Image (cartoon, rainbow, N blue to C red; front, side, top):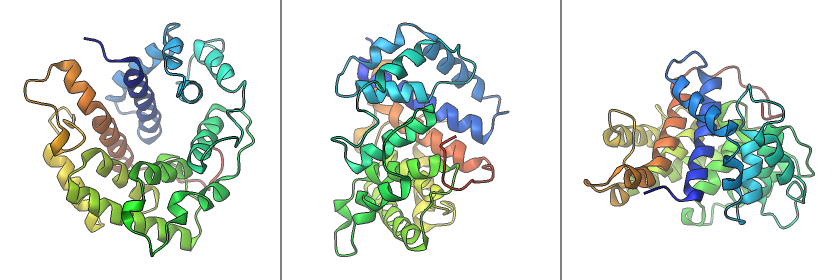
Amino acid sequence: MELPVTPRVKALLQLALLHRAWAKADPEDPDLAGVAATVDQVWRSPDHPRLLTADPRYARQFQLMYGALAPAGLPADGPHRAALAEAVAGDLLTPRRKSPFLQLETRYYAELAGVPHRLADYPELYRISRLAAHGDDRPLADLDVCNVTHTVFHLADFGFRDPGLDEAGRAHARDRVQRLTEESVRAGTWDLTGKLLLAQHCLGLDPLSTPSGAAGLRMLAEVQSPDGAVPGRSAGDRAPAGANAVEFFRVSYQSTLVVALATVVLLHRRPAVPALGGAR
């Protein structure tokens, strides 16, 4: 039984994101070679680009991410270049009909791909974000963990640059992320906890030292198998004991990749963090 197209595409894009972060954090790590070989093979395949457009809802964003996350060494006329050109041919790189979050994500990948855009700068996109707008009088449940964490990831290039927030903005974001981490650990949501631990790091916190971060790391260490797999998104949504390889992958791949991404960034000494600017 083959994995459906859209989950397969998402998994490969997330794998490419892991590869990029791993290569920046520890390019000499011998364990990186297997991931690098898989990403290189997929990005060279002339058959892969058609999978990106299988679902029209995600097609242009997938093509942009595919072009942005292309590994080094591909030919200049490789399939990723044609997909990228198709992605940016319309109004993808303008604010038209985009939420602040989608504008931020699009700007991040456009800069990573080296294509011009007409989107607002990062400080403005943070100012109009749901994270920045969350007041002290509003319940924490009003915030979506994926929206919050990816806002931080895109501002901070997944931990490889300063997020560019002023003192008040950084304190606000840290408060919300730490409180969300506490809630996520309490709820036992493994994938969201992994994202929040990385977001803490991106905001200049040490998850090993914050109470919520330490609790999250302990929880993930308890459920992770010796090969690094996290068996689902939470204790209530884990792969059954008799799951076959495809069933296990569908349930576990997202949490496993998130935790792997957090691990390679957190456990390897990151290079000097530049000020907010280009994504590379």
